[in-house]
Length: 409
Ligand SMILES: [Zn+2]
Image (tube, rainbow, N blue to C red; front, side, top):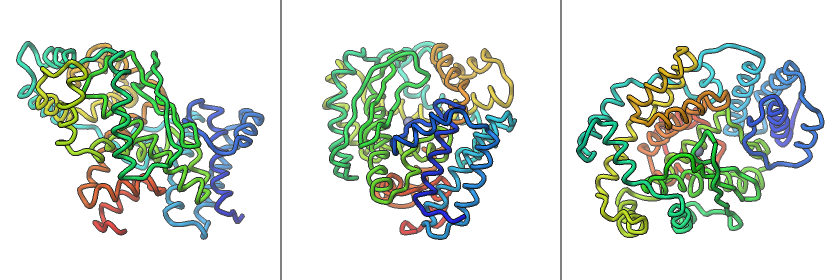
């Protein structure tokens, strides 16, 4: 059967909407034609065996499509492989977490050696203010830079305005774009960007966990500028409106596109600001406005850097829960010991990892971050970042770019 380009995207979207009927939340955002969604609702839950057959047929059609660009073909192929894995799990299939993640995200996750976390502890020991145990010092430090939620609400508009200005200069935002921020509670995540389509998002911020002043610019860069909201708005303009790649009207939680999205979001702040610029911003504006001018800025930044070496610990926790059958108590202890987290934070992480949609998702953050930072070391950071937000890229393509070392590839 020969499909035109538009049809392949449409079929992909219809399958995604049908799978969401079995696993609500699988479709994180949808902003394509309303009738497709209505028709999926009306059809009700389709048998999983039918959906599997249809997905397999679409995979064949994509592999035989000769009129679509190699980049789009690669993107669709890998998104469909992820879909096949989701269906396999829905039908009761058992696979290891590493195999699940590899099929769903086009990356192979690995256990992170505790030596990394021990190195983080060593660095933290050097930069944290003196006191009791390392964990006590960490918690004490974190409390000292906490700010109340009212302060967060007061500071956010200024932060957002600054990030937006720089993002627009570098990456040319669609004119109509904007987002609203809402404060929510009782969620497994700390913040979430809900893309609404037509260049609009709603960003929810969870007030269950404390806010620290150093977290705010990174949070708004991650969710807003130039992270998720920017990425989706630019893709809507270029890929959906101009090129009619309808597969980009649906945002899936369990697909390689999620690694791309989180890689973009976790490298967002560093892409639009150097360490020096960030330092100036804290010194001149953010610390005084938070009544935290007495806090040593160098210390904030050094502790932040050391803390990044703890990335990957949540992935280990996911392996412990799903492959090693460790108890919640053991996982909680592990997170508290190596991650220096409080019991509450550990519980919060365990609840995130217990959700079948999120247990594999946890890898997208640090794997996406590591992959993109490696890419940026190979060439012009802005040029690559722009390609990541404008083109149908997959983790495999990024690995190819890195391998080719040719920025024009
Ligand atoms: Zn994110």
